[in-house]
Image (cartoon, rainbow, N blue to C red; front, side, top):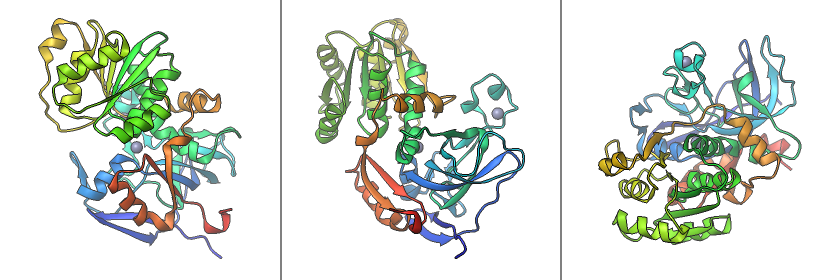
Length: 353
Ligand SMILES: [Zn+2]
Ligand SMILES: [Zn+2]
């Protein structure tokens, strides 16, 4: 039987259709990949429920998904670093490689980056895709395909910890206990943070955070950011040198600034409304540096090494599993928001055990 390419295609908001699309052929320097696992990301859900994120609007049918691993199924011309059959994680953003940001080593800032499942670029919630061979990361035997897919959100967390300067001995505050907040908390511990406190508006998310390693959990039951900062400081036994907001919520960013020790760093990882009110003078006069984070840069290998060496265990975060054929159910579950990470098995039915 000839292979087909079942794909989850978003036509417009609340309209995903499962369609057979042509199998893409790898171009120069690319490989074709039989996708194995694809996680659902908050951005996928936003495109599904709203049809846009910021200036990126779904105007034409777009394949969803960008958190993936797979098996190399074909080599394009000139590929020498991979072989057919290799198990790989897929870094889903290909920069232009020519601009000053790319040449300066900060390719995540490239204005011409082609990022999967960001309109109009198709994603990886499909049976077959193609990718630049140097953005594939070979998985060692002790790293599963699901863990390979988790490298995408983990790379965000690893990059955020690098930007924030998390090292041995630091006290760290994380605002927001969604998948990224949890991974940032776990990465901060792996980077040597002494103690990590995490906040959220949901007690069940906090209970989960505690199970996967948070030292302190603090329920955000007030919008009074200064009161929340006092609680965070009390929990950590002193002000955190580093705070990372993974929620994008105004009150959480305010909390991050108020809580952070003078001379420390606030990292903005979560994206919320484009304009927010923050106590900027408080940050200025205490020399609290505010740093942005956009996706990741040279982070995949570090994230892979952290999993391969057992410094971080992302498996408990995968709370729901479905097959590609069940994508619509998976998105409904994602909208309900009770799952941490939903993983979709994109392999061909004959290959499933
Ligand atoms: Zn993502
Ligand atoms: Zn560039």
